[in-house]
Length: 178
Image 1 (cartoon, rainbow, N blue to C red):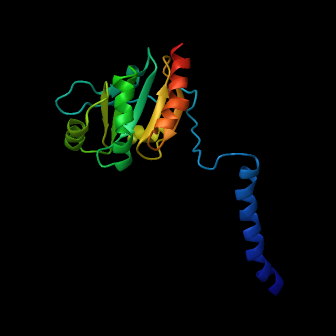
Image 2 (cartoon, rainbow, N blue to C red):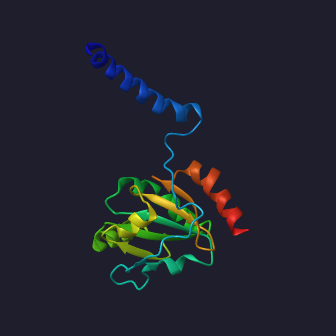
Image 3 (tube, helix red, strand yellow):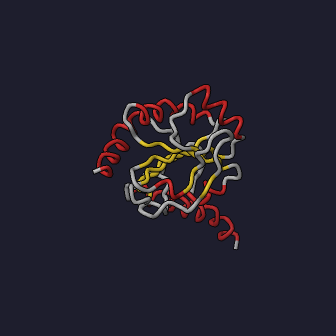
C-alpha cells in the first residue's frame, strides 16, 4: 500500500507530461486557440449604437462584402496597440472594418474613438458581453474575418500585428474578395 501512495504522484506527473507532450510531438501550436465558428455563419446578433450615432451593428450587416469584425474596449491596452493597424486597413487598404465595443461604457468608447480615431464603419455596443460569448471571444482585442456570405473565415485572439496583417490577413482578404 505504501508503494502505491509513493508511486501515485509519479504516475500523475507522467500522465500530465504525456498530455502536454503529445500535441507538441504532433506539431500542434499550443498558442493557437481553436474556434468552432470557422467556416460557420456569424452568430445572430443585434447590438445598439453608441449614443449620438444611428449605426448599431447586427448580423444582417455582415453580408455582401468581406468584413473585419473587431471586438475592442477603451480600457484595453492591447486594443490601443492594434488601433493604428485597424485604421490603416480601413483608410489606406479600403477594408470594411466593423467594431463591437465589449463591456465598455458608451461614453468611454466615444471618448476613446475621439482621441484615437474611428476606423469602424459601424459599431455595436455589447455592454453585457452576450454577443462576445456567442462569437466565442476569449478576451479583447479579438478580430474575425467574415466573408461576403456572412461566414467566419478567420479568427485572431489578441492584438493584430504588422506581420500577421501582411503575411496572413491581407492575402486571405484578397483571396476572399476574389
